Image 1 (cartoon, rainbow, N blue to C red):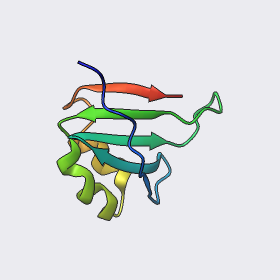
Image 2 (spheres, rainbow, N blue to C red; image 1 turned 180 degrees about the vertical axis):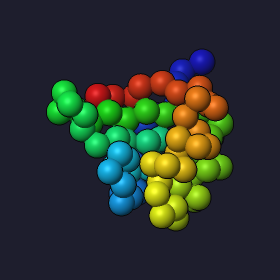
Image 3 (cartoon, rainbow, N blue to C red; image 1 turned 120 degrees about the vertical axis):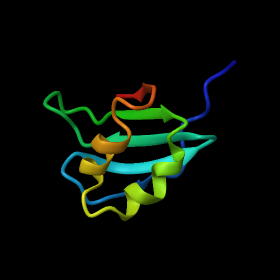
Length: 80
């Protein structure tokens, strides 16, 4: 089974940690701001797409991501 294509539409969010969020085929895509290495990384989280709208609307998308998604869903690096 092949991996889903990278989400073509990422919505920018105001966050010190997260640059943009998108979803496709049940996957939640999270693009992070560049880290200490200067590289922006995009991760995808299986079966977490239903959190997309809440993350987009959140006052703190990063805080909500850490509460709802990180560690609760399988994540894999897409690029970065």
